[in-house]
Length: 276
Length: 300
Image (cartoon, rainbow over all chains, first blue to last red; front, side, top):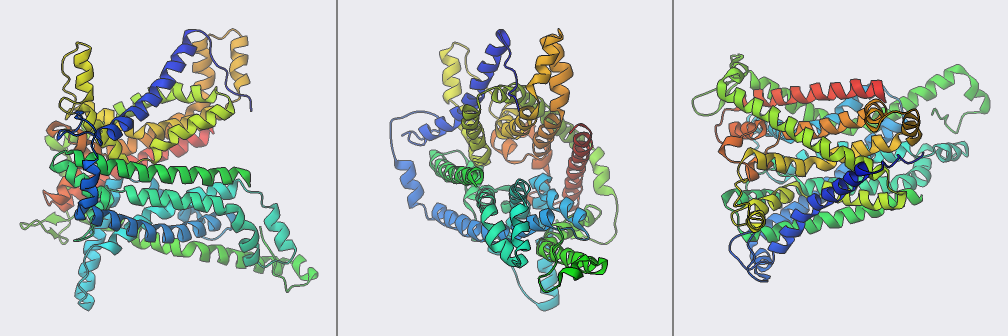
């Protein structure tokens, strides 16, 4: 495919300026946030000399540490389950035909496009009704907490994982799989030794996306969390609403760092994708 | 691909009955693979959706609870109230504004990306992907720091002799936060659409004495329409339901539909009304998606 033609004259200049503007727009706020997280001033956004106090405050705060550990625990379980369910759905949709496939395909898209406020409301009411039902029927007293958050995150992450894995499956040559089956490999063996190694980068990419989305979610988590299960974004959001302090800067930078590490890992997965 | 089982003889494979059996087996396998997610989504997505629908017809009782008996349309009728209408139109307007601004920035940018050499282009794309992956809450908070009292923006405007700025807690700040948050959602589908266009078509239109504007209007734009529509929907829908951005950057006069829904559940405790509003939001989303598939189907 030939590259698009670059215009000449003032249009070319305008394109270049717009291009650099976009990068400046993306990165200047992030750079300033990092800068001010080291600022020795009670007011955010005002430079008052270098300090690491705000980071120390984060590491000494048991609330923040607890929220961080909650977030990680939730993200690990969510990623594990979402990857298995998402990969199975992707395989079913890309390699098989079955009754109800179209409905399943459409259903799988909904959690991606639905506004998160709507999904949060749905799950809030669901858990309310479900717990009430359990209480009436069996006398179980359940509360929202770890499992309600995990269940909610999986409900949207299955779709994201399956989209990423499907992209990998469609781009893949089916010749090898067919050859394996022609050579009397069972369907399982063909999957285990031929398909799986090839889609592994896609699965890794899906896992990283699921983990990122789970670690970042505020709106849905806020609705389905229970006592003792505040996650880091929900904790930070609460702090921001109470009043902005430089301590939030340092937590933000740590969250930023976590996101960046996940992006870099996903780029490695992407590269593995191209090299296979 | 229908794959015969290993035990059968070559002759068996040829018979139509066997093919039918094998096909059935394949179909069952596919169904079983999809089943766990299918069941999961029915329990934790479809049923919750139905519960919201049921709630939207229910009545709030005096204690802030919900009476599920005695269905009525009261919650939907409330949408016509002036306050609710104001919020609804404000959300539509700000989401529209966000979408248009994103489009105006992202279209030339996506074209610029498409004209770079492949090696540079990949690096540039990575730097668009990074904000895409970065925590949305944190990125909005960064603007709170910049726009704050005596913050970097005020310092800059004062230095330039423009006086202090009063952006924070205004609608402009909310739109700024939304554009910042969702710009990558516009760039990526636009780039995907523009990159796929054969550059020779534009060259041909120029060779045939089409002006730059004509080439853009009659060649580039129609061919990139699927990207324009996909990007616009990806920006418009979350902007409509925005809750985090107006909460961090907005003030009292910038309540949007998303925040208003949250208020109904967490503070006003009018769940039926909140459920009805959620349904309105979802209806807008569904209309957008249908348009996308219709248009995308025609032009792709």
